Amino acid sequence: MAKVTIIGATGRVGQYAALSISRIPYVREIQLYGRDGSQSFLDGISRDLIDSFAATGTASQVKWSCDLADLQGSDVVIITAGVSRRPDQDRLDLAHENAKIVADLSKKVQHYAPDAMIMMVTNPVDIMTSVALQYSGKKPHQVFGLGTHLDSMRLKSLIASFFQVHVSEVHTRIIGEHGESMVPLWSATTIGGIQISNLPSFGDLPIDDIMEKVRLSGQQIIASKGATVWGPGDAIATIVKTLLGNENRILTVSAYVKSEVHNIGDVCIGVPARINRNGVFPVSIRLDPLEVHAFQGSVERIRKLTSEVLKNLEQSEGSSHSEP
Image 1 (spheres, rainbow, N blue to C red):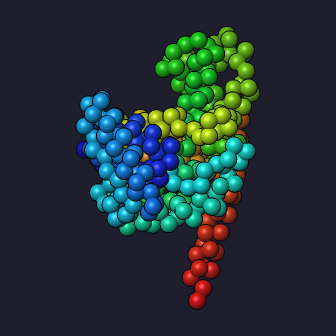
Image 2 (tube, rainbow, N blue to C red):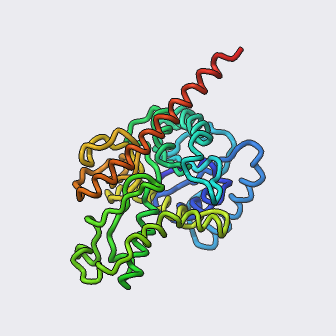
Image 3 (cartoon, helix red, strand yellow):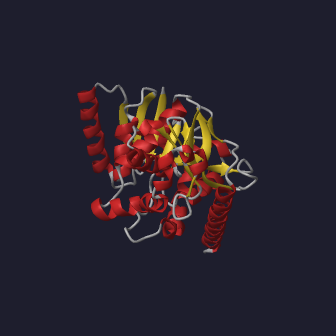
């Protein structure tokens, strides 16, 4: 039985993720963490969740804290804390602001919960996963991000709708950046076990329109209701369940990839990974030549931006240390 801590639990994604994670049978305790000053809010969330547990017969316990020392004993620490994205704002615009928050939290997670896995949700998630990996000092398989898992589910839903089949019949994934340069893997997409390109109606599939919907989905939800909540919350819980249940499922998450995909890597980015109780392990795959080219471009974009963010962090730390 595991302890799962959510840092940034006062946010809407953190709150719903807590509810969704509470349904996982392997979870003994959910720890809600928020900044000092949020005690009353955290207490309210906790009481509301306890009422929900009573109604559903959920056995999980919920606790809250504003003291990072209470991370002790965590098996998974989910970081959702950070500056929220505006409807007209690219995820990458958030990078420098959120990197400072994530770097500080990652060091403290390692101090108080050295055996915990870190799951990154804060955007831009690929870059923040790299920041967490570097500043926590953990091994690559212990740090991962939500990545393109939700994007893959959005694509899956749209394909199912077009072909009028149950969503469980569709197997597909998106790799690369959780953002503009994401790469759909049509070569790895099947419906009912049949390669999608072998279906006569595949030629009518509006690929460009579908991918535009996937890319803009988050922005449109934010513009309409202020935040994406249920999709990310359930996607987070799915990954936590896969990890704690030692399921060895292959999900597309942001992970440190070295050379598993056509020798392209040395960055944290969305890739298929085998997930079990020991962590997240990228899977070696071969792609269609056009997909390789697109993935290479996505990796180069994220690697460049990650380098800039890490360099800026180092300079900020250096200047703070030099101040009298």
